[in-house]
Length: 278
Image 1 (spheres, helix red, strand yellow):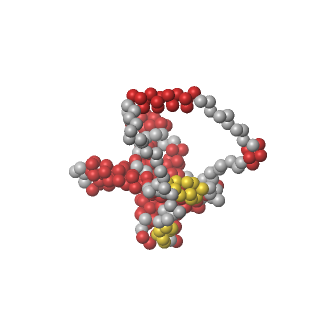
Image 2: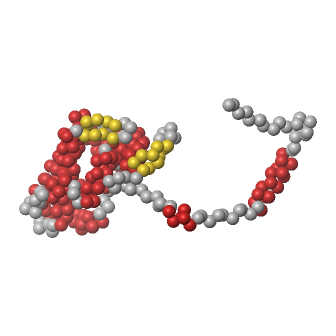
Image 3: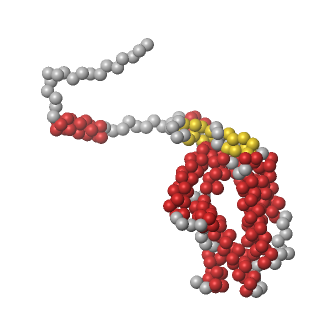
């Protein structure tokens, strides 16, 4: 059945009111509405108030809560919280990639290959591209590892803690730091290889790793934990010689810049100032 909407038609014989007259009428109608008292709000029934369940969002629980979000077309989707975070991270990752390309082209200039590589690494850190990529395309692994870390059951961390660093001197620790940094980046590249991806799930926005990919990811994380432990071990020690002091400060400074892109550790800043001057 078709419905027809009929609008009132103005009588052509009645003169059209002027703008001033229309303004005065509108102002009077608005004044009546403003002076009108709002109807008293009805109190909720006790039974409904007592039985209303509170809204909860479970971030890392075994049974995650739901999250409603809008896609690029404006359509609303209600999915598990982790998938909603992955969707937003994917959009942010796309924006960050475009910004990375724009800034790289604007700043590369006449840089050589080493300078371009350093610029690319700095921009990736500033824009947090790697973190956004993990949240967008490896969100299941990221949430699982977050839960495991909170429970103290991260296999890569446990494996890294088995490496004995106390028997090594400062020079050996510095050399191992460089070696494990190279290993970490090598395994990180292996994770991104085609043979590490079993399947892509565009609907959920994630990449499922093969067994080889899972092993490469484990080794990458293990190397990262060992790097952190080396830095912590060097920070705990009191240098016995000027050479050991310089090695320790150099490694710790490099690690601080790699992680934070600046010196945030004020204790480290004071040690550098005391050792090398302002």
